Length: 145
Image (cartoon, rainbow, N blue to C red; front, side, top):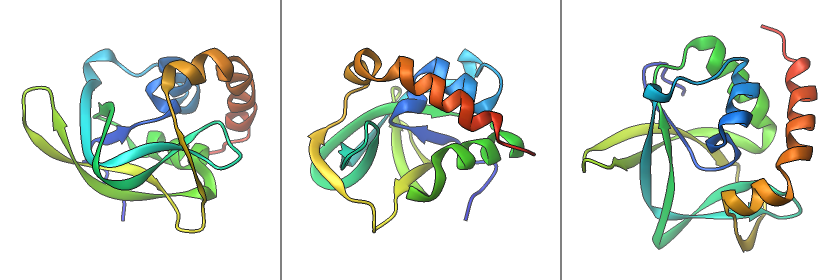
């Protein structure tokens, strides 16, 4: 169950500031974002897609960003963007200062198939970002609050 006061951990395309701004409908303040690390998981590409999902992995570590201060509209827009392949889950993430916090994250539903290919933000930016921003803009134009 989503909890509006919890920060959200982004590990995929939403780590890109341009994507996050299009999805939210406004830029995300830099002070609302901080690097975070998730242990016990691995980030892989969804089979047949260019975006990632998390899978449990005993020695895995996923670097991402923790975003605080999201309001109800932001969260509704994020869920619209993430679509039916994801559900919100709670995960413990570690901040640079060593503190561990509970965050919400979009986790792939059980019926979503993972590939074995590790997903990397820099590779996604080079190969897919331009086309993805066009698609995301069109998708979010259909969102209604």
